[in-house]
Image 1: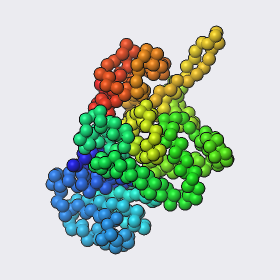
Image 2: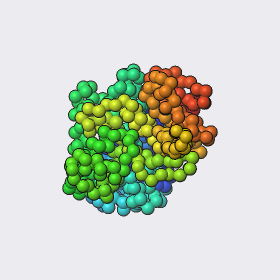
Image 3: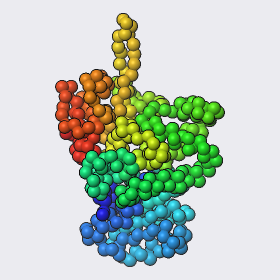
Length: 416
């Protein structure tokens, strides 16, 4: 079955012929190569592009080992450009070519060439890879499958599908594995033998035990506020040894650079300013997070929060954690405190405040979940996502209450 990835296809179409090198990035095994070699290639053919004008080179294929030489690659591509019609160059795993920047830059400015590349491991995990091309590269970030992409491919109904998705995540290969044991093995092996090895090799990490423990702490505390100082204290309480905070800060950046985790910063909604550390960290794929913990900690409330974050990123929002300063009276004394909004989402002029609540069975729980939203005095839309089959409604405060199923599956869920 072909998994549709229409969001990314539209992005590729929108940047056609823009004179830049299109750099497809994202976590390993999220479907970057398939997006180019199958989905985008099929679209080009359907819209009249001759197959001879689509030059696809897979540098992981042993048969193409000679093309890992930059001069050979350049000569081969030149030989495939036969006329003045537009040619689409698609290169998988470009990191196998030393000085690949020079090869790709050689095609900038050519009016009949459009260049697309993917890459993995030590060289191409970095989010700043497009700086290699000195402003002539355009990055398209690909994530694991969203739930709306995953569900049709899974063949499950939305209830069972969401349960599987919350457990095994959205890496495309996992969807097609039939047995749970296969999925578990694949995810655990991929994490240990690919992602961790890439980071260790790229940064020449010797203290792999610290990296392993850091991952375990982040996986156990998704959605919890933390920073290198807090993490160092946790390390000291567990291992009874002092940990260098700068090293921990570097390791956190390595994990972000490899697209394994994402960081949400805190934003003072009333003060309209960002607050330095602590931050929240979320896993790019929840199946990898669960595999890291040997599938022992499946807390639906935290996992649902992570899925909401990932969905918002997939939809192109920048996502922060909201902070709402409030004052209360206790025993005649004025007390200052802070309430939290799970997500402050921005895209252009649009902003939404979103709260994640697995269940709201009592009035007290409802008041608790909505307290921060009630203390925001602007007119942007406020949404509570619940983990039950809750019919969508708008309460007396004007807040939208929507089920996780509708939120994830309806493209216009933020506008309902």
